[in-house]
Length: 637
Image 1 (spheres, rainbow, N blue to C red):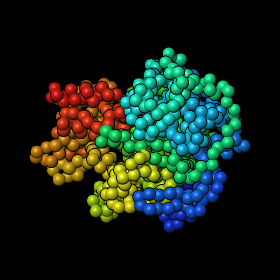
Image 2: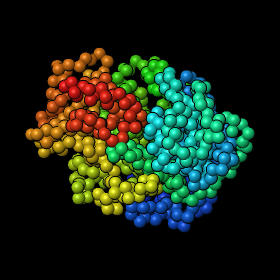
Image 3: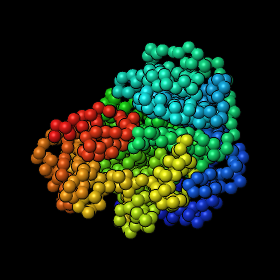
């Protein structure tokens, strides 16, 4: 247990376990009153609601009848008190820097909103944003939100095929893109990919192109327009449209096992209330903080904790365009040092990659500005947690290990850092208003320290409203397992202190000789071994035990793969968990298949070891070649 540092707790928004408990109790006993109070305090409303929420399972509405605007909340309401405060500190991969104050960002957003308005776009229209990690991508989001244009951000590394599928599913008429962006010193040519996708998207009327890299692009007459030319003549004032609280703010596509991405719909008022609250609860945001979430805006983390949450809360946000290893593996630590970052939020996958490079690189930089660390994307294994705490936080920074999903909109389980003692590897306790439970197959609460399914028993303001164009799939996927209760698809257990331990996706639980064994549990043991940098574990069909444990391993520098090490790792797992967990197979790999947000795609590894082929959606993969190399290794074996 790591209790909150006394000095941190003394200044925290929620400074004791008792204060957290009181907040949680109020939300549980009087949810409608609680969320009405939070909404009134944290969000600006043009018109008040008739009642806080309507719940007709599985469909919910929050702040019914109220009118607000996400762009207004992120910009206009800060101008009087924070107009000259930096809103975005941008660093491009080549080293270029820009700092925009709230007043400057407001001007850029208003000008671009006027550009969109002049092209005939209005509330109810839909736009695709396919851009690099530059401030104009934030401008695009907030300009769309200002007018009520529902946006869908498509990660700039996605292929033309993935982009086309999203344009078609959303039936978008507007695409906002760029000539390209920078990634590991190379130009990622976005306009070329967009042109390829648009060949099969005749409904798109306008393509507005930002000039970022200066690369040569083809501009289609009558469809393609340069961003800078349009913006040059636009007015710097554009009133924000008062929009219904349930107006669709954005659709974000997640990978589906069927091969068809799911468009997760989030609306305006409830989403904004929740992400603003959790910015303060989880990150203990202070007026002087410099907040850096390393996620791309193409992921929900970038939406909620790089754009809408921080800007609504009036934060200064760092935004970095490129890769963490360019030109060297200390790029992130240089950014922390240069911009005096106080709150740093990244993924366990990134942390493990940094661990692999050793402690010398972070030691070269002054990281003393840091006061809070965070993780997102998957549970962080205890060994990586300890390294992060010791090497990056110097033993003085609380770590907020956050559990949430694209579907949840905001963080649901995480410690309030001034109140909740930390346990490495645990997401700890739920946020106020989140009734989380671990249940068995029949929906009955599981005993302490027993694996089960993680469910959320009551609606919360930022929950998804539906799957775009497919309410039946929404109901079937999230609410059919236990009627009226949100099924997260994750396995978890709850310990004797009520702390939640997320064990990975339900299909990441193996059954070995009658023992239910979490892949996450085996992975945590493996990465504690001094030779192991990363591990991914899947179950492989076995005629005797039902399933056998198959491990994919990447090694730290200085270690070589071989039968001796494989034997050592098998024995290590057997010693740490039990003989039944001893891996049948250890496979060494240079890299593991990951999404561009850093999650290991265990589904693909499972397919490789069971069928030697990969089906379903692979558009989120960072490197498609990884799968081919691993499949080839399977054939050789």
